[in-house]
Image (tube, rainbow, N blue to C red; front, top):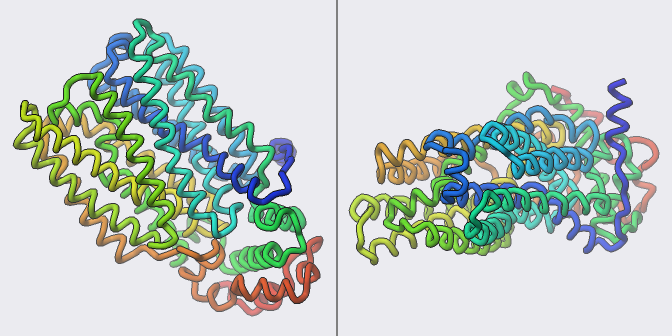
Length: 520
């Protein structure tokens, strides 16, 4: 019965265009379902917390303001854990579709909320949908896009966070003039548009070739690869070579490891992968950006900017600035490398947090315009520093370091850890800024220095490596037996499609090279 249900859920229409350039653009468009919605939601709640029509309608206190903002992340934790294996069971595309539908339901209920209880339930449901899409969308992008576009695709996935934030800032700035509850209902309703865009695009993008190959659908996996790199030509050496390497990597993983919790803890390579993923989740939420993402109004008030209209205008400009900087960081990810990009981002974020703390201590709540402008400028530079590295790399890096067997589980835990850790600044910042004021910026800046040491010591560089080649950084035996992509291309070019037993099972090269591997 369960198998029949999974088969039914996995059925999904597919009308993939022939041109690879168009296919890759459509794959990128699917990222709208999560990144833009998250950015829209963060900016929207930031703006709504400033609007009297919202705070007065729900009679919000400092505690309930934090709960209204944070409940969506609690739902995201539930969604990411509850839907952990769904992409492995029914595919990346169907898992993304059903998660997106849940997010649409949550957004609609949020816009229709009549009291705070309904609002909280709606945001919890929205969070469940976002948690599911945050697991499935990076998998689809990382496993489907060709290597030369992978950094751009995964980086753009989080860059679009600011597209949603920018649009939300503009919308809430306009609806703030409404003298009714539509001042906050309309922004909530328009949140659905991004998810509808991604749902509409799904039938025109291919399924992950890694997922198809793992389920024995090698002919479909080859076609999926060809659709993304060779205009649908399955005889192209590049498509054949990628399938050869994917098949070999899957076979090596089956011999070397099993994706159980016990095996993950005991196996050095898997354990290191998960520790790295945990550090990405924790550090990306604690570097300091969330001091401004959800409570920009409070930060600006402490800097001396108290007018709500001015705060909304600054919110719009800040999102536009962060978007431009994050796009620049995305294009530099393959040139600088993931680690260098993050180190630069963290270092400057720490410096500007220290300056904000000093300015807030000596000039907070003052009428000194020069000090106010300087503090606002430092807030922009701190957010820009975060956006330069952490925005693109925070979702780019985890699916790269995780191998196929634990990629879905790892992304689920990454999303869960990230959302749980995010609750710390969301709930703690209003209290901390009230109790210790400027010191919170100093503490956060000092923590950023510690982050830099951990990254430099423990992370590995993944730029310009296929997902399968990254495994060689964690398991020496994989590095010894894995055929390089250039060698695979030469072999595929020399022997043609016969090198792959597409209707059978494994590539002939993979069979020859995996038989002698010690499963331990």
